[in-house]
Image (cartoon, rainbow, N blue to C red; front, side):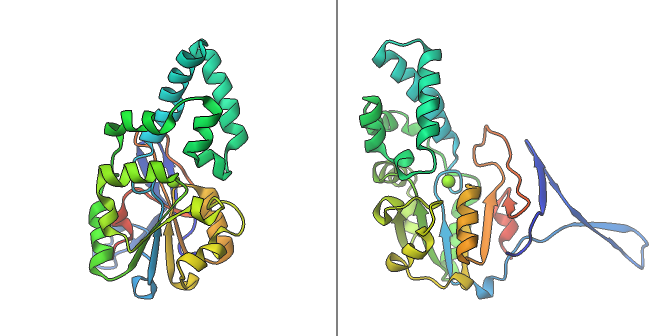
Amino acid sequence: MLKTGIATTRRGNTLYNINMTIDADSKKILSKARDKAPDWENIETVLLDMDGTLLDLHFDNYFWLQHVPLCYAQKHELSEDEAHQQLMQRYSDARGSLDWYCVDFWTRELALDIGQLKHDMAEKIAIRPEVVNFLQWLNDHHKRVVLVTNAHPVSLDLKMEKTGLHIHFDNIINAHDIGLAKENEGFWEKLQADEPYNKSKTLLIDDNLEVLESAHDYGIRYCYGIQQPDSMGDAISSKQFAVLSNFKEILP
Ligand SMILES: [Mg+2]
């Protein structure tokens, strides 16, 4: 890990630990936010998550927490409260497994055409700020840029079609092809077969702290989180990992 426990955050604000230095000439106290940038010279491969990292997680949260419960209530003739309650239980049972991310699984489980419902909501898919500039910088500096996502292929295709971000990636890895979710033990090792990488020269950015922990445990050297994955949601803080409010923070 590089810098740890850098940011204490609350919604809408970034509160950095401040390095205070005394300017001997002016005797003024200068404040400088601690630098989050890694040693780019040492980085060959950049692994990037999609939802909540490159794309605003608001689409997914809105879809699963509001739109699906509404459609489920209509389909099964339940009140919105009942539908919401039932779905939260089902979500909680599946969370952290590959099923949680599987469009086919939820289409079967809920008797709703999840792929079609996502298409219906596609106008809400949005790229997070500074993402395109960051990807372009990585491309210009000849880093190997790899999208590594738990998203189901149906969802991945829709999001690439909608955003056009695929042009920036050297490879796109889908956890469904690996057979494990990124937070599952063994994922990062297994990934080596499809995308060989030197873990001491690899940087990972992912909004899921469990994913960061699993990558860090495997030995991926540079791991970063995202401060506010859902633009309408709460900020995240981590004692273990630096969380980014903007990709500019890690550029030199
Ligand atoms: Mg994510």
